[in-house]
Image (cartoon, rainbow, N blue to C red; front, side, top):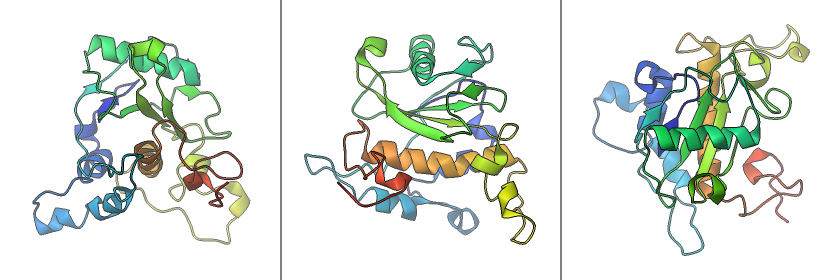
Length: 219
């Protein structure tokens, strides 16, 4: 898995993101940290198979990171320009291009706006066009909603106004950052989708979405 952050996101310094991404693959750890691992959840994801009958890999590795603190593609991104961000990262790092074994994750900081962010999506997955990097590469984008719409994309660490004051209050984010802790849930969602449906041509639901996006009744 390749990780390309548009704005600097140091995964080794953000405990929640680092623990989540590195704990999808089982390996010996002290009992205290073992309780924090998510590999049992990823084991369920790995039960899915492709057209050849091969399972989703149980091994998830953070191969490389790349930061673009200069906002080289601007502070507003479209779905197409996110592909350009990845193309720039591939050329600058340089990242190896392995369309069979890599997933690119793009994380944007809380001051970067993205097409449909907070209105229709908190993240999405798709695939790179071959014209960008020479291959069809699966990727996912996840935004930091901390300053833009935490009540939409960082629940339960922020509560939507329509829920009023009668329900349970917001949970305290374990990392002390509503935006980053909200991202972990979206990363899990998108990572599971891109691993099981990398070319967006697997089973879909009545509304044309991945079945993990809502209605699970298949066509």
